[in-house]
Length: 68
Image (cartoon, rainbow, N blue to C red; front, top):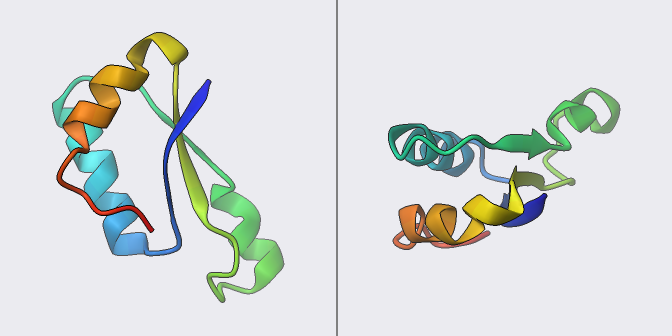
């Protein structure tokens, strides 16, 4: 799997998920449950992962979203 996006912003993460769903691209959010450990302070960014063969398509789908 390849990381295509990383953010601490839950709104941006939701938008990225929406764009990938509309494009029909399967994805996985890594570190999503770390908030239980960190106390919801946003210290650990969530990573959006896709299969290697879908990485180029996913990056095109997210081309207008600023990272971070």
